[in-house]
Length: 507
Image (cartoon, rainbow, N blue to C red; front, side, top):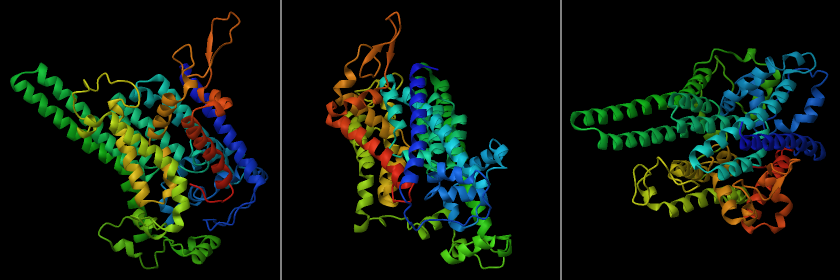
């Protein structure tokens, strides 16, 4: 393990511990808001330690986390539960029934699931931080920028969603890990990781773009080599072979990544369009909730829902439309201005990243980064840093997420949507810090540290500080750019815990 990876792991561990501690304190200190949220009745009697676990980790179960916990405990009972993909609930239930099974005499299933959220998301966040660092090193080709990006990720503005019972940490770990494998050339393993990510969140489908782009880049590079090293029919054969390999990789990879989404939609179709259960098999308290709130449950004796009659009966699209009112420009209302303000900092980072990259690499962007430009000798030995040609596809991916999130989603979700799906918000933030913060350049070595101290007894060993931790005591002396970025990250890091854990509206 390198020094940088150890630094990232240590900081990630500290921030996870602080998050769990603060959510417990804030949840206990601030009364819960009476929100119109999904709150299913408890159908299991509490055991000895349930009240303790609820006090410690109850703040992790609010808002959408309640859906994941309910699915992990009861399965997909209500129609709108199908908005939440199955991988995370399966992991929670697996932890509750294996690692936490010895506690079953003291904790109910609900209690063990809450503990599983705390333990599982902590471990998954550590994996995602390491995966982001590895991806950053190989794409940015800049050790300082990769380290600073990963440390900023540890204080992500989407912190509460990485800690609570949401699938963001799981999705980030699989996405960053899959993209790292794809960059390393392990295409099949990358497809598997990205496919599993699609079983966690629907926007995993967008990762198909990486699978189509990066192998295309490799194929064009091969054809360029064949053009200078092969002659005659051999050149034509190698051209055809490279194209065949590209088409096969693209088709197979797309099918693998999309398979979990398709399988889940088929499961939803079978559950509600051809049901095999009756209302008598549903717990009375859960059935009563469905009747009061208008939740649809599968019933073999009732008529199928109207969406089953559509030419393409996608349950996910129906749920987003009917239950969440998600659609093009539907959120553009005056009453949603506060939510647009909440999303503005993340949107600003995304816009700045796209604009700065295009300004620095306009010719490359116009050529879609697929072949050499007059200013660039190729992608084999790219210039290090954020303006590296290899960053192009990540900036495009970030821009697609940004545009879709602003126009077609509940806009306040943009913060966690981008923070768990793209490394670009952390890359551009780290790039701006290194570019504008003089304190980060007061160093004796290449380590991104504010100060370098010698702590060995012989006076010859240099031990670098964590640059984020080292900057905080000098916050007032930092540049306006640093104050803005760290202020945004840290304020959302803390406010998210206070708001979300008490059923107050947040991102």
